[in-house]
Image 1 (cartoon, rainbow, N blue to C red):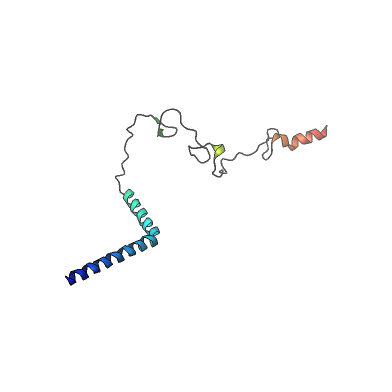
Image 2 (image 1 turned 135 degrees about the vertical axis):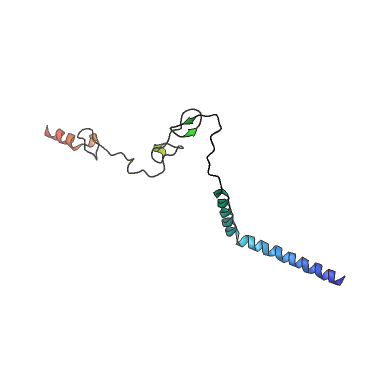
Length: 127
């Protein structure tokens, strides 16, 4: 009977110590556990057949946007090529290719507008 009591006490103290250690490990290794979890998710998605399933819905494919939907295609930003906003509302920096150069309609030179054209200013002073 004494041996059973001692064994029960030993098991209880061992279980209590294990519970205390678990709490410490959970608090200290939280970032490491999340990192390992992310790795497992990536590995789970890496396995696949690679075959593309055909579209089974009833909506038509629009070649302009390459999506199946009803109605007109949504307007697309010409700067970043996203559908959720227009070019005037784009928050991405403007590409050098997309920037419009200022051109004068009077002399055809770039860098100023017609209202600031030096040719018109010179004509006004000659007369």
